[in-house]
Length: 379
RNA sequence: GGGUAGGUAGUCAAGUGGCCAACGACAACAGACUGUAAAUCUGUCCUCUUACGAGUUCGAAGGUUCGAAUCCUUCCCUGCCCA
View (cartoon, rainbow, N blue to C red):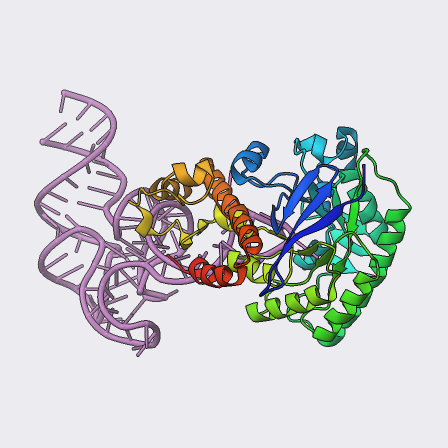
């Protein structure tokens, strides 16, 4: 049982894109990688079997806030951790609840000690401190666990973003101190990733990257992006952060994004992504395909009996027709949610595998440029 | 044949003299969604117009009234009960 390893296996002459291999006690992850989001211990509407066989996911996420509220730590501990509980035996990454500081802004209060949340389930109040969040993630048992941060909204005043960043840094110190003074619970190694903040301000991002890099963590994350800022700003900040984070450690861009966002950020040096878009938007009728974006709800697909996307190595994408999926989604049939989610995730995983192939082939940049044009199209 | 309840926009269904192009629900059509309080939310939904607005509606035809989906008359149709 060993700490997470990262080996760079390929680079690109005309961009910062690279390929790599992450090794954890639950297996390997080839990068660049997309990680499906399984907030409450499940990727919504998708079974673990489908994640393996159709989506071909090598790692999924779980969420501290949601799992802490339900089923709760007692159940998770008695189960022997989330892997044993949900049957996913590949790597798991848990988000710290930092994003909920942002998304649950109406029901929480930020203090130096931590954040007091009001549960969205029953209204009960809970304090999330860096120490507590480390303890919870120890109990959930993610292979990669995230530091507790504040994700400031967009737009934020410079002064607020600066204060928020420093708070995140102080919390980061406490996360590491507590993490290092506690032990792995289930016989495999857990790994803590710090998170860069600083909103859209280059000097703050630079300072945050320096602070985060100083932790010499096994991997580093970029947070606080894709919260409403213009796309170009996402790319610029992402690039600046990648340039300032260690080369030999995996870089994880949190919460991003569209297929073209992912390709653009791979080009800038990101190795890991997660996003709810393929699942949430899939449930809401938006399909990402190798020809562009489809709103499967639209009448134009009513009699289109062609496969959802025959180019994707996924039985769901190849077997079910657009017309049938439209019917299922319009009829609110559960199967529709599953097909749309499985297809979208399979497409995302297909996309990062393709990116990897082109990085290794050395033609990533031109491939990426042509792909982005195609993928953005509204069909 | 007698009695009775009713006929409102794609459907169901409010409204019972002016605040009605007509509540609401559903369907339909379109949009949003980026570390998931989201199988959710928003908009349109008689016709024409981007909009302002204009024009036709509430089974049909007449009538009362300054004014009718709402009141009166006749007719047509539907449900239920009795023969």
